[in-house]
Amino acid sequence: MMKNKVVLITDALHFFGKPASRKFTGEGATLYAEDAAFADATVAADYEKEFPGTKAVFGEPEEVVEKVLKTEGRIDVMINNDAFPALKAKLEEASIDDFRNTIEGLMVRGFRYAKAVTPSMKAAKKGKIIFISSAAPKHGIPNYSMYVAARGGTNALAHTLAKELGPFNIQVNALAPNFVESPTYFPKELIENEAAFAKITKQIPLRRLGRQEEAGDYLLFLASGKSDYITGQVLYFAGGWA
Image (cartoon, rainbow, N blue to C red; front, side):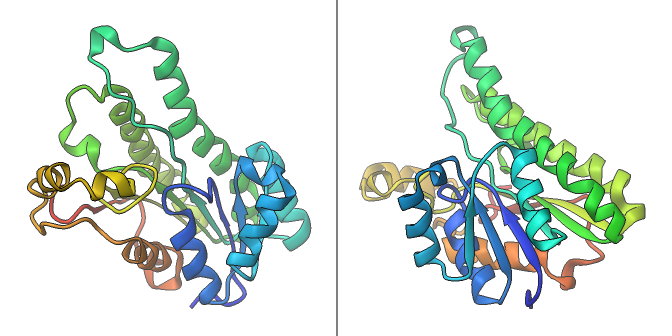
């Protein structure tokens, strides 16, 4: 499905980075995985060993894109897998610095990656940009205004860029999860707390968390030629919650 495709995924050690790496390399993609931690050569080597066929990279968004383009000549799929703590705070107690950092981590980085990769995709007259955001903006979550606002901005960005880049045969979508197994947002210790886990799953019509491999399959579909007529969508992956 992805043979001979060049894929770049960000923040690879977090959120959906590992399941995506497993799926894409398994389908024959040339995968570049970005994470700040890969500045440590040992961490980078361990990741490449865990996911054979992956090339670990690090740096500012523009630098990372330039590295991949210099080596491969193109990027077929750009996956913005940006993760940042969902900070809980009442509005009147929320830190403006925390809000700025949340926007930077969840919106600005993805914007920079999309901006950096677009010229090469326009030249190739094809490409896919996928933002992994959140279903939270659909309903809103009290006391999480910073996180929800940032994710909502990313969803809006996907809508807008799809219209701007559609004439160049570039599809832009947002995968919007909630209640999915993830060390970033639903760590093992939370899942193993029976009372807390029961409270969480009660909100989900399917009464369970989504699985990482399911998220990987969804990303694989969005990155493949099977989704060439899908663009400008916020695609919810939340067990019926959204």
